[in-house]
Image (tube, rainbow, N blue to C red):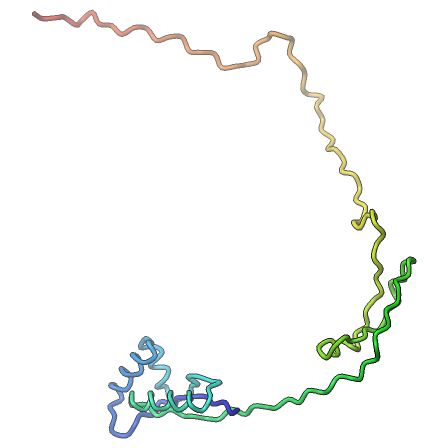
Length: 183
């Protein structure tokens, strides 16, 4: 399947006014004046890429109706051929040895299907399963309590005042001697 890209280099359809084409493209792409000015800078700017033939023709026709000349160009797509996986031997299941293997030893991974054939040449270390109840985390040293110098502190005797805020004495009653009642 061929893929195409749509580009624009600032060319307008013969007989179309450049200002009208700019306004049409601004509405079509919902773009501001700065982006439209960039489209009309004269450089080739890719509008859309990876379209099939029908989609590319639709973009070209729509831009032509707006008054712009669209450049439709086929993309060069490389075909990649997959290499078939090597013939795999039947997988023999061997029981895991109870002794832990050395970290430097490794075994070859045997692919179980075509997908796993990509991992056939991976060097993988031999890891065993730890016995039940084994501690898998490295031992950490016990946290040391901080050394705090408390020699400057002492205890007050029972019942002593510990510096609590004392209640303020009640305020004197207001002076009402200058007030009189009239009848």
